[in-house]
Amino acid sequence: MTTNNLYLDIHVIQTVPSSNINRDDTGAPKTALYGGVSRSRVSSQSWKRAVRQSFQDDTVTVGYRTKKAAQLLKDALQKLTPDLSDDDAWEQVNAVFKAASVKLDKNEETSALFMVSPGQIDQLAQYVKDNADGELDKKAIKAVLKGNQSIDLALFGRMVADNPELNVEAAAQVAHAISTHEVVPEFDYFTALDDLQPDDTTGAAMLGTLEFNSATLYRYANINMNDLIENLGEAAAVDGAREFVKAFALSMPTGKQNTFANKTLPSYVMLTLRTDTPVNLVSGFEDPVTSKQGYVKQSIEKLNAAYKQTLQFVEKPLLNVALGADASAIAVPAENLTALLGQVTTELTKVVKDENGND
Image 1 (spheres, rainbow, N blue to C red):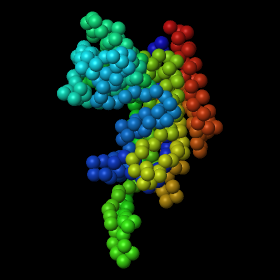
Image 2: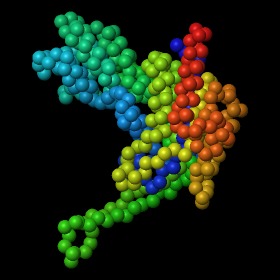
Image 3: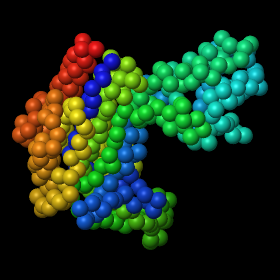
Image 4: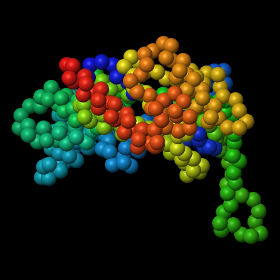
């Protein structure tokens, strides 16, 4: 197992046209104050969900983030034992959750969202079936709930307030995406006519306003490869890192997407593999980009400049590869996303293998 620090930084520059992909409690696009000006913001939670949905679209197995984990276990139990009655199944399910020190309410739901993988549910059901006549072992149940992790559970972790022993350390960190420039909120005043409205009737059947903005976003995430290897094992961790980079680059939160059709692709992606510390390059945009001819080019230049500046403080990375305009300015250029993923996978595999040889 790899023992030295190993971090994969993912930097993305991406424009999003008029849109409202992540709303606050008033329905307005989320914002942040940075560098003294208001920025468009997309929360990390929002983009994590988009990544999980992207995994599913690529048929990558993901876990359940739900209050209904007990129902999942009951269904799995009755699938293994079709003649098991509902009452007997619930009795066994309650025994499992009691042994795991996770409380269920009167509706047989956990008090908070509980992340669990399909493999863990299946293993728990099998364990209960095999031990139906005996006492459940707390250590065995804990081992099931810590093993066989889905990729999203391994990347984003799990916090269980009822029983911290079931916590899973997140291997990935995702920053809130912010615009590289100042944004000013805009409003769409809209009206809608009734299709059955008589011709001699004037006026709209419906009217309202919708707040939106457009932005060039800086998006950042990193993976602690040691943690990911601990959660998934070495081979699966390398594959998981590749899948996460792909999903992070191509995913988009779906807020108001039917209204704005704002699905875009990144203009620039840079991956950096480090052994000392992950580095968020958002400081490159503390001085906001100002332009009347677009923000992408200047944003990439500022990102590259911020990267160069970090070399005064941290070690030269093992790998720095980029895709998009000006990629060759500071990094090994990749021809396309497949080539980018191939380069980082090759380097990750090599590093993990080399460390095994030194153990």
